[in-house]
Image (cartoon, rainbow, N blue to C red; front, side, top):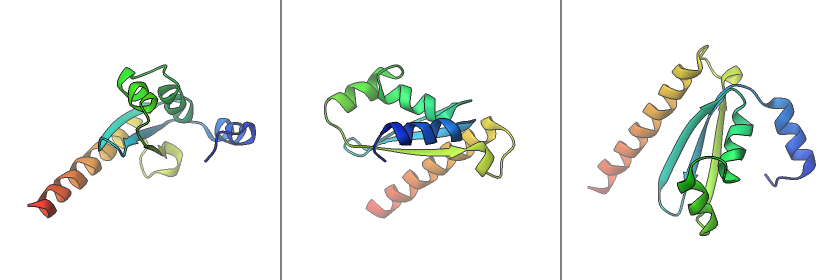
Length: 102
């Protein structure tokens, strides 16, 4: 999604508690975080107002994807539970990739 004024307005309207995953496709790294306004929190990360490593990687041209899981569209009632499940899922995925490369 390109960040046009229309898209930014849509994201602001849908913003709420959730978990984001910033996926660095170039370096095969994931940065996971949570926020009461998850779209705003993820956007701040890519604008250099968060993790310095993320901004450095973006500035150097690394390819990124952003995945957002909102609490309201999940089966969870607690943001920390959603975060834990997201991190566990990522860990399991990485483990399965390791098994495939052996």
